[in-house]
Structures are given as C-alpha cells and as structure tokens.
Image 1: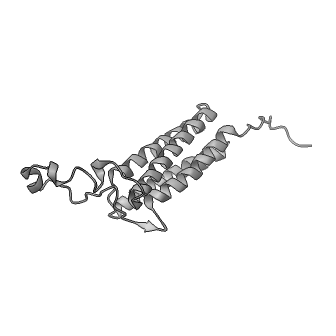
Image 2: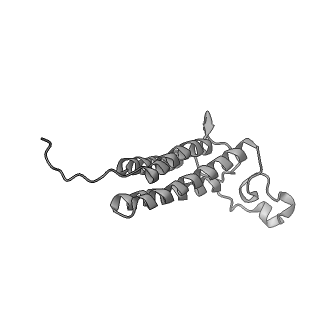
Image 3: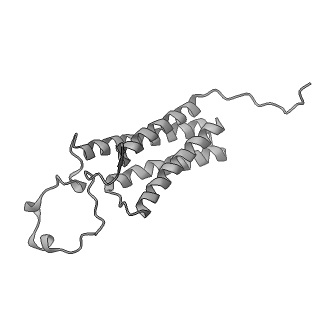
Length: 162
C-alpha cells in the first residue's frame, strides 16, 4: 500500500511540476488551468500525510477524490477548448462582449500581456494540456482507489527463515 501511495503522490508531483514548467517556458495558464492545480496540491498533501502515518486508507480515499476532481475539471476544460460546450463567461471568448463595457474599459491598458482565455488551445500533443491532465489524473485516481481498497499485508516479526 505504501508503494501505491508513494507512486500516486509522485505522479501528482510530476503533473503539478509539469504545469509549472510549462508556465516557466512561457505558456501562461488560464483560470481553469489554475483550478486544476489545487486538487493536485491536495492529493500531494494527503499522500504525504498517509506516508507520515495518518490513516492511509482514509488519506488514499480523499486523494482519489482530489484526483477525480482535477480529472473532471480537466475533461470539462478540454471540452471547452474543443468547443463541445461553453465555458465560464469569465474566461472564454463567449463573455458579455463589448456591449457590456464602458468606454474607459475599452481604452484601458490594464489588461495583462499574458491573458489566456480558457477556450484557447496553447499547446497540443494529441490531446491538449487539459486533456492530458484528465487522462493522467484518472490513472492516478485508479492508483489511489487501489491503495485505499487493497488488503493490508500482515506485519511480519522479522524472524529468520529456517
């Protein structure tokens, strides 16, 4: 069970670290990208807690929920990127439009240079980043579920075999 917890925790560290590496490489995250990071951080904390001695089954079950949460956000985000369904108006091109903006808003220079809309695809390798997050997070959720449900081995006393 400890190996599964360590493996799943390491997987979340890899996905979250990869997100930060992409950001360092110049791929600014959108709002939904940032939403996907929080459950990874929670799963990492839960994995560390399980390895530190808190009830491992409970920690693994909670981490599975975190992995499923980020997978769900990633799948929704991938659908928004593909135009399969609308995304939040606050971070897509389908917002309120120009009619809801004042003249001052239209002339404002306060817009960040790295503004990324949630329906823009900034990187793709077969799937988009959000799509890969969904797939890999589902795999991590399966590891967490396996860790939470796997029967524990009985403790051995360390007697020499004869």
